[in-house]
Image 1 (tube, rainbow, N blue to C red):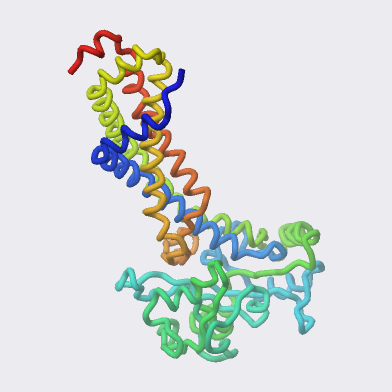
Image 2: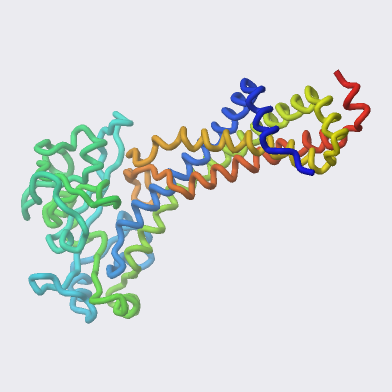
Amino acid sequence: MKIPLAYNLRNLIIRKTTTLMTAAGIALTVSVLVASLATINGLRNAFANTGNELQILVLRKGGTSELGSSVTREAFAQLRALSGIARSKSGEPMASLEMVQVINLPSVDNPKGMNVTLRGLPPVGIEMRNVRLVSGRWFEAGQREVVVGKSVAKRYPRAQLGGHLRFGRGDWVIVGVMDGGQSAVNSEIWGDLNQISSDYNRQNGLSSILVRATDAAAVPALIKSINDDRQLNVSAMPEQQYYASQTSSGIPIEFLGILVAVIMAVGSSFAAMNTMYAAVSRRSREIGTLRVLGFSRGSILVSFLMEALLLSAMGGGLGCLITLPLNMVTTGIGSFTSFSEIAFNFRVGFTAMATGLIFAMLVGAAGGFFPARSAAKKEILGALREI
């Protein structure tokens, strides 16, 4: 014979103060875990939306990032003549020679400044990306003009439309604000390739080449053709693969979040255990009465364990509610690949909340099993005699 679930709910309501305190401890544990998962999800989403499945990123041989790469204009001229490269609206090969640099700007979080990615690119580079102007206009060739991503404009007070930035050899005018959706493009500043490379005295030692294949079937063949060409001395990879590798920036945060959550979970488990042990101690006569009424030891164990799980479920639900307001809030993190800040939105999705709830249930099970077993082992006469 099973003990009704209403019995456990009534006991939790009667001990509302203890119940709320224990649930709050579990909620804090779950909120830390869910927040760390939301951070990783947001970062992965930003990089996943940056790459195009038809595009290939070309770096120097052995290069792992655009910032540490160097390609020549001669290699670019040879590469853009390869077969399998798509054509732009004007009929030119869709190959963009680009330069990547970092500049330091004071942010809303750090007045001393954070590194921001500066990208010099030709008009075809803009055409190859899914980006639109929010306000202003695109920069003109040969001018010290830049367009900033919307996250840069939001997080950096100096990076406003019509404002000036000082880098390279002079001042640059911000003539536009662009929106790349949920991509990492929003964390970049774009300008004319020739003007930026001239300011940094890098007319021939540029960073990367972005190439678009004619179709998905042509991508592997084009990558092989580029990698096998010894004269080019470059390596090619799918653009999506490159940006996926940059999620390594969030691994320390994920590890730290999980570590803190586990440490807090130990404390929450002991809190739940103490709560349940206190409940067993105060309800000895109830346990004895239940045994007299015919309820088995197994039923009592399941009942008390279920009570602990209900308590942890309350804490898990509360923890998810605490982190829910973080959803789509913009923040930034330093990338170990580009050595600049990547802005992204927290994403408190179903998977993160489900993981938090499962984690809470495990905490409850760990904290409730031993008290439940203690309740089930009580002898009938001994339980009835306890005050």
